[in-house]
Amino acid sequence: MSEKLAIEGGISLEGELSVQGSKNSALPILAAAAVTGGSSIIKKCPKLTDVDAAVRILEYLGCKAARTGDTLIVDSSGMCRSDIPKKLMHEMRSSIVFLGAILARFGNAVVSTPGGCEIGLRPIDIHLSALEALGAEITELHGRLYCSCRDGLRGTKITLSFPSVGATENIMLAAVTAKGTTTIINAAREPEIIDLASFLNGCGARISGSGEGTITIDGVQKLDNYEHTVIPDRIVASTYMAAAAVTGGRLKLDNVVVEHLYPVLSAYEKAGCLITPSHGSLEIKAPRRLGGIGAVRTMPYPGFPTDSQAAAMVMASLARGTSVIIENIFENRFKHVGELVRMGAKIMVENIVAVVEGVERLHGVEVEASDLRGGAALVLAGLAAEGETTVGGVHHIDRGCQSFENNLRLLGAKIKRS
Ligand code: EPZ
Image: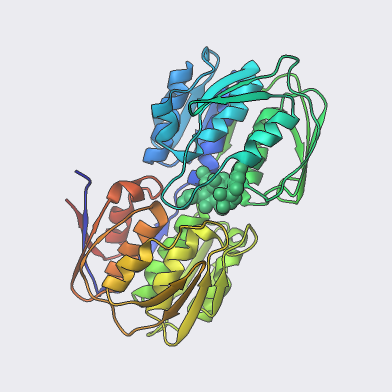
């Protein structure tokens, strides 16, 4: 049975925390480690169940992985398989980035379609058509994708119909050792894309333009060993900031890249939080009562991140006045709403729009997490609520937040796992 977190709410969180490395950077970098055929030292690699799932894939493929503290060393010299069983593919949706990596390494791959998930259908059509443009022949049979490229991958111009993060990563991974030049137009601009490019370039790749709408990849023959430090997790940082905000607390966060947080800072400031950034850290001081966050629209970077939407909704739930949240990225990312309403929040959802009328207080009840960010948001609501909140489905939170309850406890929260 899944574990639960029991939270006694109503305590202002105060203190200092160092933010973990980014999950969404670490996962494609682990796939990239498979392309190198050598040894990759990955520092600040977060300890998460999703990272464990990626390691299981690497080991299945014949790579070796060893962790010491926050450092993961991957040796892909012994990689000998080009297939990933369905069970491993299904452990984590982003396993699909291994497709580009395996194709780059071996020129063929057999993987499963990752299927839909709790936040939406999440099709992979953009990934597949881009890999086909690079020369892969892909056949789907009973949910298995058989991919091969008889003449090797060849660079080309690929225009994405949407700046998909995962598709941009898959193309970068596949194109890095392809013949010729690949240009990605309408590429995702997320910081995690820049981090992947900086890892690959450190290994000897020739990628330019990451972080911009057009990325150019000049194929190289081989990649080398490299040591890389994963960027701080901007989503986890925004989650802890919201924890301080909803409890009327005060928090200093170390290991942050303040610019990566610009898309969320204006909403937090609008709510009345005082934010003092400095190099590599940031302080947040919450007002006695939060103000509304106005209208927040989730967008590809540098817009407001969909992954911070649920935490922002908890802030809006406790704020003065009415806020509006529009979820433009995933069609099913309001699953936390029902649970927040059971805690006393006043939220009305119509398709992709949530209208949140702030209430003075939430009250503790038993709630159930159904996805990672929504689950973390329920914990935030519990921290602010009167009485005890029990959050079930904690395995969702463990996918992306390292030592979540321990960190919250360090800030004064009364929270325990059972
Ligand atoms: C990444 O998912 C992140 N995951 C997500 O974080 C994040 O929410 C998302 O980017 C958006 O920022 C990782 O980095 C591991 P997309 P990804 O491809 O790559 C549609 C979290 O909680 N689409 O940019 O899957 C798709 O359905 C997770 O940490 C297609 O239609 O996101 C969605 O509506 C959740 N066809 C939109 O595009 C495709 O082929 C954005 O998806 C690909 C995507």
